[in-house]
Length: 236
Length: 236
DNA sequence: TTTAATAATTGTACCGGTATAATTTAATAA
DNA sequence: TTATTAAATTATACCGGTACAATTATTAAA
Image (tube, rainbow over the protein chains, first blue to last red):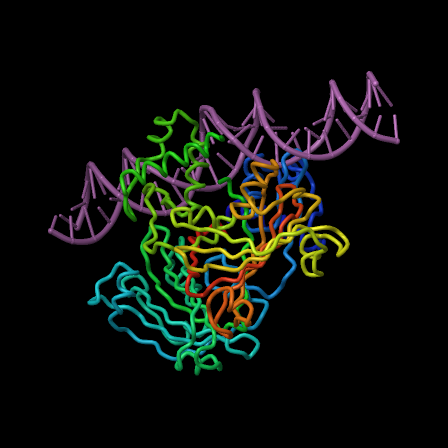
């Protein structure tokens, strides 16, 4: 693990352990440098990471402060690896409805830079949280990259398998969101009524080298879907 | 303007001018260093900024590549200064329904770290895009920070005024989102029907020193609301 | 006491260096 | 030709330095 990541983790742990609240002032930069025996730039990088993650904010001339959001149970939109991780404190389970190798739809092919003649793994599942239906998900995995998949993997976490099992490196993602009305089939899966609201997130996931390997459309139960973003000013 | 920001802007312009597409390889780091006569770390920082902004992606050992998302007209959720900027190519206008000084609701007071005895500017407006209703917005500005406001400012951009007019520095924001059904009043403003879907975004905006100064609830017309996020792996 | 000027604190910009990991290209061997 | 190995390329980690800007604390003046 990288040094600055390790340091960031430890600082976050420091905050957690002490249950420090919004606005609490943390030790100054120099102190962290001494504590971790690392260079200034390494500490700066670690703190920058925590700032982007929404854990702290820094004020020039003043200090480093704890940043806390008040609402719990919201799904973070800024960490991209599915929501399995964000909600790991809660019980999220999956039921696989379909899993097969097929030709992609035109839309899926386009998003994955494939032709409709290439093979993809198609996975359709329902995900539950607290025994309630959270969302309905349809995914297309480029078979030339994700060479193998089975129900057991899909019941658990496909991303974990892609990273650890296949040794692939997930880089970035494009996520498109909109709101609409449920159709009959979706309503059935989610235990809602036709024309009830739905929140739809379409995502394209890329490897670090820029190759798209997963296109998915997730339809959320509007009652369960609460999201949040902790945005920084990121210098522009 | 900071050097690394300036450089980031120029690199982005370089891509725009040439209309470079997804995956196009850009000149290597060393070339940019020579071109801008800046240090390696300054270039690295500029490129990192562009990476977070979703303009490029970098591959160690390989190069720097253009990143493009295909869909246009989506509202970006990662740049936090309202959406005035994201949609500036489109015509966004505002109609102020209410503007006065009052005592905040308990909810607003809590989010702004105020009591219900403190004063706030309350602004209610409807925003239009392409002559269609985009959203209904209610904002509470802490009067001790945002000391003055009028209809003219609210018709234009409150944030621009806060930054340029009042000289305040906007730091970060917490944004909470959920989906629900419209009530009669909201439906009226948005030109939709009761129980149609709505997308609600509640935001708290902070100054760089961590003081919250604006709490707002924006109810979007679901037909106009398409959002996107370009997420990086951000090292965790 | 209040206000204004000054000094100390503290994070950030920017510099440029070495070492390293991932990838691509070139050279070599089968 | 194809596969393997070695070398070159390229971005990133990490170091530590100076200068500077924003804030806070201290001192001096009113």
